Length: 250
Image 1 (cartoon, helix red, strand yellow):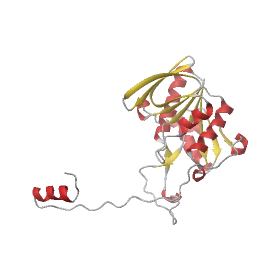
Image 2 (cartoon, rainbow, N blue to C red):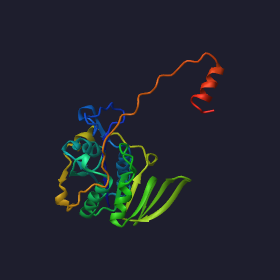
Image 3 (spheres, one colour):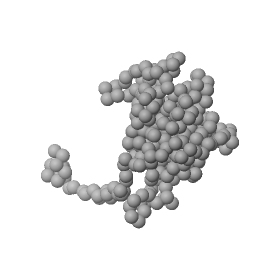
């Protein structure tokens, strides 16, 4: 059993960020990175499945050399090894990442491919579905429970009407929702072991990815408008008047 887990680093949602001078991106000095929360669920589920069925958990990500810290945090949770594909965050989109991961899948031949259902920076929710399409494999998105039964995966997934349980053949792409599990904290021994675990570094040329054209291009970013100060009213009648005539919510 081999489980491939695709992970991504994202800007810490609690960090105060600053845009660069031309608003084309974020000042690197103003950000801190962390593992995408949904990716942590994917790593945890891979480790749970490994505990039940044995095998190997392999992490994969696309990014520059400094993304290694993100990889090490996943290895500290218990993954066996990792693969980093050389890339630049601003030169990637969901489709290109899916095509890169497809090449990694061909190279590694995993039984299960786990991803977070989406990244909290772009919120695109596309890579898992695109990867399954390129692989010609079955998929189960928004998983809240995963059970492997022979060559099948029984997945309970969250849908608009509640929960849906489906059975899909392996190899399969499964994307993790937050309710799938509670990610473990890395232990001190795990952190020490992570420093010695191998991280293979590959280029797009080595993977055979020649088409790097983007389907989506970010032109500029804007900070949200500053919140307007509130106002005091002297009576309930004044409040009702403002809600009705100014806010128009009554």
